[in-house]
Length: 337
Image (cartoon, rainbow, N blue to C red; front, side, top):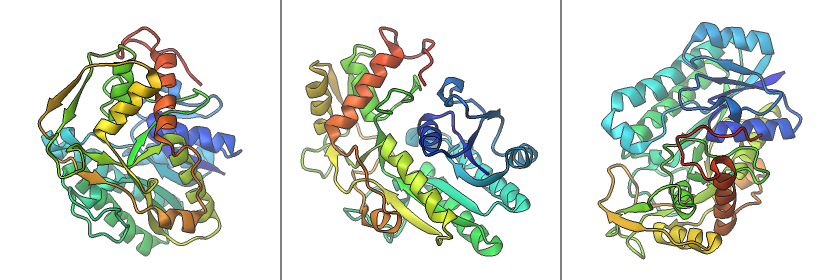
């Protein structure tokens, strides 16, 4: 049996593929390569190039590779883009998740791990935020993921599909062995942008909002190392294979850092300075986003091992230097992993 990873040529999905391979599991990647990278798929993991919304392709892939579980990462993830193009976001995220679930029901696949987001909680959630907090998305991205969760809940009840919904907080860092990391030239997450600024790959970065109701006026986030997140998916798979019940879990550490604190960490770890500009707030960005992460530890026995901010930053810096070298993002990358 094997696990199908949709979006497995992307940043988080490729780390899931590595984690499964490391655990001795068989994995298959389905990715249309619109934002993913062929070279991100680990050696020995089959890559099927195609659309997750193509039911016939999904059914053929399930049959050909004896798929018994699916981890669904394929999605549009940029919040400001979702505000500009809500229809495209709903089509890519909610619409294609519905189509994928239809194929899984037809194929009688009974285990599903869904990549969701803390954005479902909205702009001013309780801090730290428990899974029981009332969802109030502040962007089409968050709404598209919440709608997908609702569809999954109802499909699970109707068809006996067991699932784990993982609501990510802010994912950062790279595989410590430099087998994968952030390959997107357009990556907008703070740690990647700051690491590239420290390495001279861009002309610095902007702080979007310096008048927020936070200790230093800048946004506060719970940053989770991508390798710890991948291990959370492996733990979720093990839970489902043991016959565990469907559940929704936060993926974070339970503490946060402000934008200014992250910038200080990048400067400290890299030993380099870089320009920082102040800019207006962006629509859809929460002020503070920190997980109540107790449930995932209790339910899955998940124990992260890369929690320190300087470690997350250090892995990101090493990956950016390794992947891009002296070149600027946008040029062809070398194969890593």
